Image (cartoon, rainbow, N blue to C red; front, top):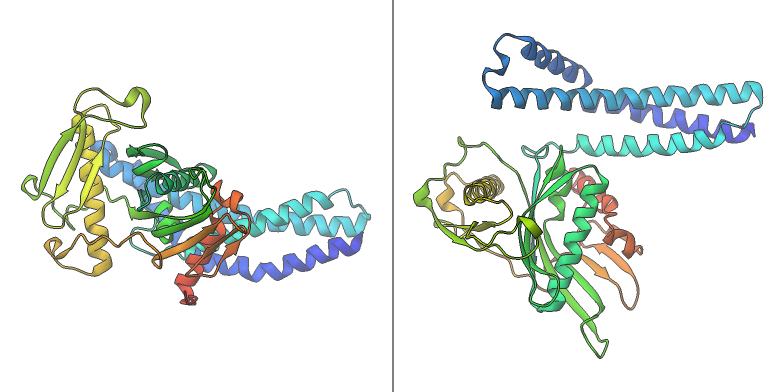
Length: 375
């Protein structure tokens, strides 16, 4: 019995340097200083005179407090497990072994997620994420695949405590969806999902083929940060875009109106098109469209290091063979494999149910180290 507790005591000693290192990576002293400043601001007279600014301070305060608490909980868990190991050795009691195993597994998971969060150093990594889905060529087959990906990402969001909001949803002709836009809300949503941007390829026996032939389908995922207020980075004037209104259609139930409340904006300089139909009023849909357009323009500007928005070209890559970032094979074997990181699993059903963390983790690690695999 003591052998197992001794083994866990050794494991705990082995992870201690990593746990200590996370304190430096998180800059705990800096976080504590930030939290004190934010709390002082909230106690100052007139703090709520500017609601928008005060809300931002409250949010930053909660984020700093959450990071500190997460780390303190990991340290406390480590100390509790060491105590259990020492008590078990003294009293020759194995009743705590199951709890010890579970606690250690939880600690490893928390440390790994904390490590990944330290890799999220991009300007917009902490932001909400806007995720767009676009079916490739292939009609019903590709549109069904697009809807499967939509389900996969919304499942992932729900499993991680993120909220998601449908911005636009265009149903397929017979099944699936042609395109959709959703907003995933929560800290680090963009940082975790940014690596999902690209073409996703499916190989399976088509449920829409009477001859049960194997089909290859493609769909594209675009992930951009939600940038709500960056007027200093990009100004969008009414003359910069063309606005079209139309009747809402597709998913939405009682939220879909019979009036022409849906809005589509076409940015003249770049050709970028955004649409929103899920709000009840035309004004709200337009505001959401401007929010999406601003985010797209700022993200492209940052990525391509352009000084002027007019320099941005709305070039769309083809959704086809050879451009995929990940392959999903259902037949003749089961395999999901990322072409950039080499991360793979045979648990296709798990992935389609939202188990994307291994792929997200591998991408962030490769991005930090530069150790990509060749396609």
